[in-house]
Length: 207
Image 1 (cartoon, rainbow, N blue to C red):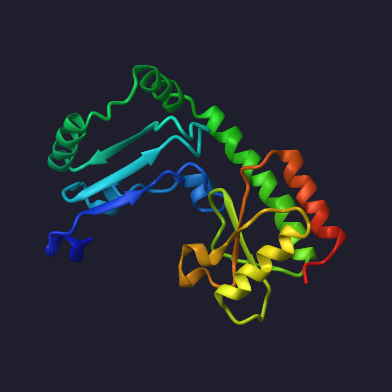
Image 2 (image 1 turned 90 degrees about the horizontal axis):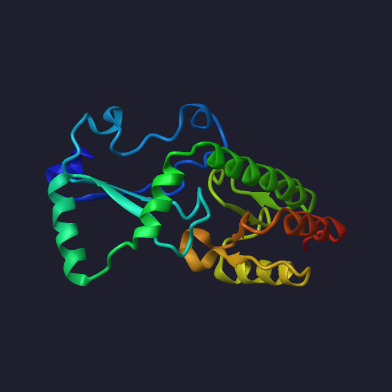
Protein backbone atom coordinates (compact mmCIF):
# COMPACT_ATOMS: atom_id res chain seq x y z
CA UNK A 1 0.00 0.00 0.00
CA UNK A 2 2.81 2.40 0.88
CA UNK A 3 4.56 1.57 -2.41
CA UNK A 4 1.35 2.22 -4.35
CA UNK A 5 0.85 5.58 -2.70
CA UNK A 6 4.44 6.61 -3.34
CA UNK A 7 3.86 5.97 -7.03
CA UNK A 8 0.35 7.41 -7.23
CA UNK A 9 -1.16 3.98 -7.96
CA UNK A 10 -4.84 3.42 -7.14
CA UNK A 11 -5.64 0.20 -5.29
CA UNK A 12 -9.04 -1.30 -6.17
CA UNK A 13 -9.88 -4.20 -3.85
CA UNK A 14 -12.48 -6.73 -5.07
CA UNK A 15 -14.29 -7.71 -1.85
CA UNK A 16 -17.38 -9.47 -3.21
CA UNK A 17 -16.42 -12.70 -1.36
CA UNK A 18 -15.76 -10.99 1.96
CA UNK A 19 -18.84 -12.52 3.63
CA UNK A 20 -18.03 -16.06 2.50
CA UNK A 21 -14.91 -17.15 4.41
CA UNK A 22 -14.78 -20.85 5.26
CA UNK A 23 -11.84 -20.99 7.67
CA UNK A 24 -10.50 -19.33 10.78
CA UNK A 25 -9.63 -16.68 11.76
CA UNK A 26 -11.84 -15.02 9.15
CA UNK A 27 -14.86 -17.17 9.91
CA UNK A 28 -14.97 -15.66 13.40
CA UNK A 29 -13.42 -12.24 12.93
CA UNK A 30 -14.52 -11.53 9.37
CA UNK A 31 -12.40 -10.61 6.38
CA UNK A 32 -10.84 -7.16 6.83
CA UNK A 33 -11.61 -4.63 4.13
CA UNK A 34 -8.87 -2.60 2.50
CA UNK A 35 -10.67 0.33 4.13
CA UNK A 36 -10.35 -1.10 7.66
CA UNK A 37 -8.35 1.21 9.92
CA UNK A 38 -5.89 -1.55 10.79
CA UNK A 39 -5.24 -2.12 7.08
CA UNK A 40 -5.08 1.41 5.68
CA UNK A 41 -4.22 3.35 8.83
CA UNK A 42 -7.51 5.26 8.71
CA UNK A 43 -6.40 6.82 5.42
CA UNK A 44 -8.57 5.91 2.41
CA UNK A 45 -6.63 8.00 -0.08
CA UNK A 46 -5.96 6.10 -3.29
CA UNK A 47 -8.12 3.18 -2.13
CA UNK A 48 -11.34 1.75 -3.52
CA UNK A 49 -13.30 -1.19 -2.15
CA UNK A 50 -15.54 -2.85 -4.73
CA UNK A 51 -18.44 -4.78 -3.23
CA UNK A 52 -21.11 -6.88 -4.91
CA UNK A 53 -24.15 -8.64 -3.49
CA UNK A 54 -24.20 -11.19 -6.29
CA UNK A 55 -22.41 -13.84 -4.22
CA UNK A 56 -23.60 -13.39 -0.64
CA UNK A 57 -27.22 -12.60 -1.55
CA UNK A 58 -27.73 -14.37 -4.90
CA UNK A 59 -28.28 -11.10 -6.75
CA UNK A 60 -26.13 -11.91 -9.77
CA UNK A 61 -27.44 -10.11 -12.85
CA UNK A 62 -28.99 -7.24 -10.92
CA UNK A 63 -25.73 -5.25 -10.78
CA UNK A 64 -26.35 -4.78 -7.07
CA UNK A 65 -22.99 -3.38 -6.07
CA UNK A 66 -21.21 -0.32 -4.77
CA UNK A 67 -17.78 1.26 -4.51
CA UNK A 68 -16.47 2.91 -1.33
CA UNK A 69 -13.23 4.63 -0.46
CA UNK A 70 -11.33 7.74 -1.53
CA UNK A 71 -13.97 10.47 -1.78
CA UNK A 72 -12.12 12.23 -4.60
CA UNK A 73 -12.00 9.07 -6.68
CA UNK A 74 -15.64 8.31 -5.90
CA UNK A 75 -16.65 11.79 -7.11
CA UNK A 76 -14.84 11.20 -10.41
CA UNK A 77 -16.52 7.81 -10.84
CA UNK A 78 -19.95 9.31 -10.13
CA UNK A 79 -19.37 11.95 -12.78
CA UNK A 80 -18.42 9.34 -15.39
CA UNK A 81 -21.33 7.11 -14.45
CA UNK A 82 -23.82 9.99 -14.63
CA UNK A 83 -22.79 10.91 -18.16
CA UNK A 84 -22.57 7.29 -19.29
CA UNK A 85 -26.17 6.86 -18.18
CA UNK A 86 -25.71 3.70 -16.16
CA UNK A 87 -28.00 4.42 -13.23
CA UNK A 88 -28.94 1.75 -10.70
CA UNK A 89 -32.71 1.10 -10.79
CA UNK A 90 -34.59 2.17 -7.67
CA UNK A 91 -35.99 -1.34 -6.95
CA UNK A 92 -32.45 -2.72 -6.95
CA UNK A 93 -31.34 0.02 -4.57
CA UNK A 94 -34.18 -0.89 -2.20
CA UNK A 95 -33.21 -4.56 -2.44
CA UNK A 96 -29.63 -3.65 -1.55
CA UNK A 97 -30.78 -1.75 1.54
CA UNK A 98 -32.79 -4.78 2.66
CA UNK A 99 -30.06 -7.39 2.19
CA UNK A 100 -27.28 -5.23 3.64
CA UNK A 101 -29.35 -4.91 6.81
CA UNK A 102 -29.84 -8.68 7.10
CA UNK A 103 -26.89 -10.80 8.24
CA UNK A 104 -28.99 -13.93 8.81
CA UNK A 105 -29.49 -14.77 5.13
CA UNK A 106 -25.75 -14.31 4.54
CA UNK A 107 -24.96 -16.80 7.32
CA UNK A 108 -27.40 -19.31 5.80
CA UNK A 109 -25.85 -18.87 2.38
CA UNK A 110 -22.33 -19.32 3.75
CA UNK A 111 -23.42 -22.46 5.59
CA UNK A 112 -24.92 -23.89 2.39
CA UNK A 113 -21.68 -23.31 0.50
CA UNK A 114 -19.69 -24.84 3.34
CA UNK A 115 -21.86 -27.98 3.32
CA UNK A 116 -21.50 -28.33 -0.44
CA UNK A 117 -17.76 -27.80 -0.17
CA UNK A 118 -17.40 -30.59 2.39
CA UNK A 119 -19.44 -33.05 0.30
CA UNK A 120 -17.58 -32.33 -2.90
CA UNK A 121 -14.12 -32.12 -1.30
CA UNK A 122 -14.56 -35.57 0.25
CA UNK A 123 -15.54 -37.01 -3.15
CA UNK A 124 -12.56 -35.38 -4.87
CA UNK A 125 -10.19 -36.85 -2.30
CA UNK A 126 -11.77 -40.29 -2.76
CA UNK A 127 -11.18 -39.86 -6.49
CA UNK A 128 -7.49 -39.35 -5.69
CA UNK A 129 -7.48 -35.71 -6.74
CA UNK A 130 -5.55 -32.97 -5.00
CA UNK A 131 -7.42 -29.90 -3.75
CA UNK A 132 -5.68 -26.54 -3.67
CA UNK A 133 -5.31 -25.74 0.07
CA UNK A 134 -5.68 -22.03 -0.65
CA UNK A 135 -9.24 -22.26 -2.03
CA UNK A 136 -10.85 -22.23 1.41
CA UNK A 137 -13.25 -19.37 0.72
CA UNK A 138 -15.80 -18.35 -1.84
CA UNK A 139 -17.69 -20.49 -4.31
CA UNK A 140 -15.06 -22.70 -5.90
CA UNK A 141 -12.82 -25.69 -5.38
CA UNK A 142 -9.67 -26.17 -7.44
CA UNK A 143 -8.51 -29.72 -8.12
CA UNK A 144 -5.84 -31.53 -10.12
CA UNK A 145 -4.11 -34.86 -10.51
CA UNK A 146 -1.23 -34.89 -8.01
CA UNK A 147 2.18 -35.27 -9.59
CA UNK A 148 1.07 -34.40 -13.12
CA UNK A 149 3.26 -31.65 -14.65
CA UNK A 150 1.22 -28.44 -14.99
CA UNK A 151 0.14 -27.65 -18.54
CA UNK A 152 -2.87 -26.43 -20.46
CA UNK A 153 -3.29 -29.94 -21.85
CA UNK A 154 -3.43 -31.37 -18.31
CA UNK A 155 -6.28 -28.99 -17.46
CA UNK A 156 -8.22 -29.94 -20.58
CA UNK A 157 -7.69 -33.66 -20.03
CA UNK A 158 -9.08 -33.35 -16.51
CA UNK A 159 -12.05 -31.40 -17.86
CA UNK A 160 -12.70 -34.35 -20.16
CA UNK A 161 -12.46 -36.77 -17.20
CA UNK A 162 -15.18 -34.83 -15.38
CA UNK A 163 -17.29 -34.45 -18.51
CA UNK A 164 -17.25 -38.23 -18.98
CA UNK A 165 -19.02 -38.39 -15.61
CA UNK A 166 -21.53 -35.72 -16.58
CA UNK A 167 -19.83 -33.03 -14.50
CA UNK A 168 -19.00 -29.65 -16.01
CA UNK A 169 -15.92 -27.85 -14.68
CA UNK A 170 -13.78 -24.99 -15.97
CA UNK A 171 -10.18 -25.59 -17.04
CA UNK A 172 -7.75 -23.71 -14.83
CA UNK A 173 -5.89 -22.65 -17.95
CA UNK A 174 -8.76 -20.21 -18.63
CA UNK A 175 -7.39 -18.16 -15.75
CA UNK A 176 -3.75 -17.99 -16.78
CA UNK A 177 -0.59 -20.03 -16.46
CA UNK A 178 -1.02 -20.38 -12.69
CA UNK A 179 -4.09 -22.51 -13.41
CA UNK A 180 -2.32 -24.99 -15.68
CA UNK A 181 -3.15 -28.53 -14.61
CA UNK A 182 -6.07 -27.44 -12.43
CA UNK A 183 -9.83 -27.33 -12.91
CA UNK A 184 -12.22 -24.97 -11.13
CA UNK A 185 -15.39 -26.50 -9.70
CA UNK A 186 -18.30 -24.25 -8.73
CA UNK A 187 -20.31 -24.73 -5.55
CA UNK A 188 -23.23 -22.74 -6.92
CA UNK A 189 -25.18 -25.79 -8.11
CA UNK A 190 -28.05 -27.02 -5.95
CA UNK A 191 -27.47 -29.32 -2.98
CA UNK A 192 -28.91 -32.28 -4.89
CA UNK A 193 -26.70 -31.60 -7.91
CA UNK A 194 -23.62 -31.40 -5.69
CA UNK A 195 -24.53 -34.71 -4.04
CA UNK A 196 -25.11 -36.26 -7.46
CA UNK A 197 -21.70 -35.06 -8.69
CA UNK A 198 -20.07 -36.48 -5.57
CA UNK A 199 -21.72 -39.84 -6.19
CA UNK A 200 -20.53 -39.88 -9.80
CA UNK A 201 -16.97 -39.15 -8.69
CA UNK A 202 -17.13 -41.92 -6.11
CA UNK A 203 -18.48 -44.51 -8.55
CA UNK A 204 -15.44 -44.27 -10.81
CA UNK A 205 -12.08 -42.88 -9.76
CA UNK A 206 -10.80 -39.99 -11.84
CA UNK A 207 -8.10 -41.32 -14.13
